[in-house]
Length: 372
Image (cartoon, rainbow, N blue to C red; front, side, top):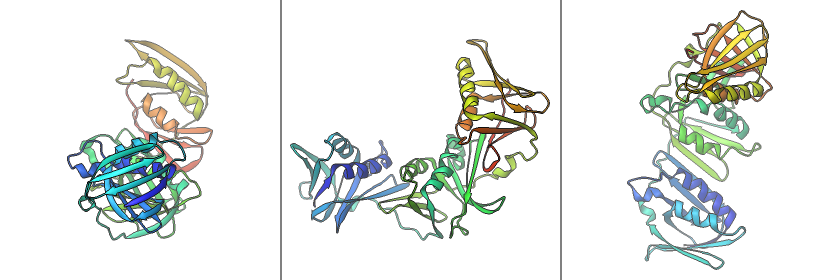
């Protein structure tokens, strides 16, 4: 195999591949990227056996062929090459080497045979549809902060993507929860997605997917089966196993009867929470909210380190309420608000609190209170 490729195109492809590769693994070939050159271009394939990413790039192909080489090492080399350099990759199967030439730089890297590289088995997808990158980005970006990191409840270690009943009919919905907070985000149901099985997309896949969703104009081809999910652009295909488990009935924890309504400027609220939380003890990070007519007092009382208090002008017309929250959870939820105002709906100091953006029902957040 011998190819010439522009440094920028090579860096983009190898960066995507090496981020999938696990740093520590017991199977040496899983640290490698499979480079396959044929026809008009070259494709780079990497896998950790749960996720597979294939990235296509244009290249001049002198001799078609394939080899595998350390993804991290190749990425580091290409990253340090000068902008605009033309990079030549030459594989010598007999010697087990890949030569990387760019200008006066020359590298010789150890390779492993392509035959040993595991390729993810193709799957019959029950549902195939197309969704705009901006729509998918909103669904996953606004829900991923609530993904659980607790390994024992593995079925919460991802985003539950499924078809649900919204206010105006069927919607494509993403939900994540860790038991302390929950995010439920809706989007219009794309054509062809009606029969999609509900799947739990793992956290790592959500992170890798984010790299495909930067171009707002791009449409993403989505394919879903009971065991796999695939997201594809013309250049990159990301295939992932889904979490094998049942996502809990999240509708039971979304309060329907919360009537005490607080409306507050989202960015002012987030800044105030951040300021008063400075003195809170790291362990609990509890912030108390005292609500009176058109007034919110945020306070922290940490016996070890001190106390803090800040008052905000808000829209609130119900009876007095005191309620405590984990400051980190409040900050994460407030930072999801794209509009100016956040609306909090309370019931009592011991019940879950609902938050949404203005009157928008398509993004709903729930946070559990703390004793303070």
